[in-house]
Amino acid sequence: MKRSARAVAHPNIALAKYWGKLEGPGNFPAVPSLSVTLAGMRTETTVRFDPALTEDRLLLQGEPATPAAAARMTKLLDRVREEAGFATRAEVISRNDFPTASGLASSASGFAALALASVRAAGLAWDLPTISDLARRSSASAARSIFGGFVTLPAGEPGIDKLPAEPFLPADHWDLVVVVAVATEQAKDVGSTEGMLRTSKTSPLYEGWLKGAPAIYERVRQALLRRDLEALGAAVEQSALAMHGTAMGADPPVVYFRPVTLAALEAVRGLRRNGTLAYATMDAGPHVKVVTEASNLDVVAAAMKEVPGIERLIVARPGPGAEVLEEEG
Ligand code: PMV
Image (cartoon, rainbow, N blue to C red; front, side, top):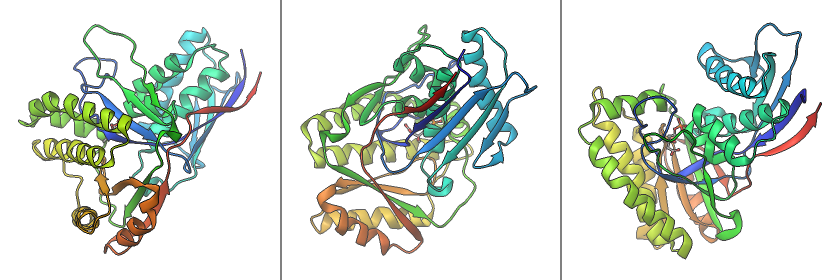
């Protein structure tokens, strides 16, 4: 077996959101999603299988992983060990070069990098779809970060046992940018797994979300193919707001919005009133991500900087999939 491997992966933002899982094991999403993998931000992860270790040694940003994060990472490593036919423990060193408080799901790039590095370190000759499926079991959005550009993840279906993400369009298909407006307010958010579970169990709106999400996904797909920003933006905003509306209908409600979220949404609407096509999307946190064409970047950035409560902007463009940087055996 190979001893160690180092891999890089980038976060992604869903243009058509996934929210909710199929009942039962396997972490299968209940609706299809479509994302763009972002350049300019990266997670780098080294996995080293070491016979001298008696348990996995997991370091995130130089600190030991919390028990919850460690359990999730060890579960992924256990799957790899089982397939490779050995029980050797691993040292994992993982670093994000973007602030984890940026509201960019670090679990997407984190589990994508961990999946790729651990599979290669174990010497398994898996293709990218198989690695994407492995990442999906830990975090469904991580399946998408294995691939670059625009990426789809189909909904799960009862009875299947494998579901990888699929590359849809290359990063250079369209000169889009995502302006991440990072909110100052850092309320403790409900994690996505817990938020989804509560939504599916208690929100009376969840059935409507399940019915409506595939059509929104299809509109996002078609608008991307046509490079139609107005059609894309309308579907992107509806996907995000329908997801959040459904979550807000849970008991107790799952509310990720803060006053700054609505202020940023209003600024995006203001841009449109003044003729700039810009559209907002929000994930499991208060931050607003603005999708627009690169030619609008300066106007959009200037407007978002003015929103009280926005701490800083991160500008990201469509980028590459996960890659192995180094292997030693
Ligand atoms: O797969 P998770 O647990 O990282 O959840 C992703 C949830 C959203 O980011 C809100 C939507 C999505 O499709 O990425």
